[in-house]
Image 1: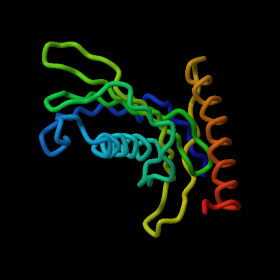
Image 2 (image 1 turned 135 degrees about the horizontal axis):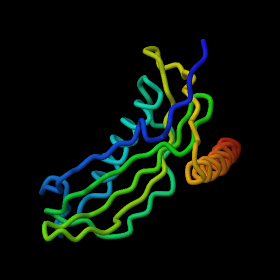
Image 3 (image 1 turned 90 degrees about the vertical axis):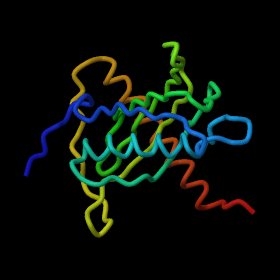
Image 4 (image 1 turned 45 degrees about the vertical axis):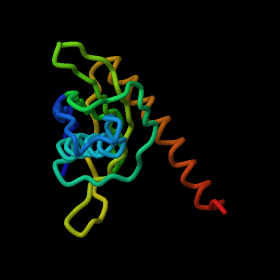
Length: 163
């Protein structure tokens, strides 16, 4: 059976979250873990849409908290597939902090890797990406380099565990 390539726009996710008291610390800043959870959810939806099945998180890297997120902020989260391997998918997730006055600024970026799985949790092949423009081809090549670096770090960690 031939699997047709899918365009990154077919799995694009836009998610909005309101930062409430349960998401904040004692000084009113959002817990990094709350933001990471929303990033993981948006990325998982994006990867699942691309794969057409459940996708599980296997790596979280290059997470940068740029701007503090505070109680009452609205977070606009965008997730987009950047790279596809045989069973794995890299998803770029961007978080923008929005104030009720309409001002918005970049708050956070992450790259998250997911693997498509069946009901038994076994990795499953995913559709290739349809790369029809220079931006998507560039993102895919950058994703390939990040995957290679990620795999190299994982191999080094397995052979030289921390003491």
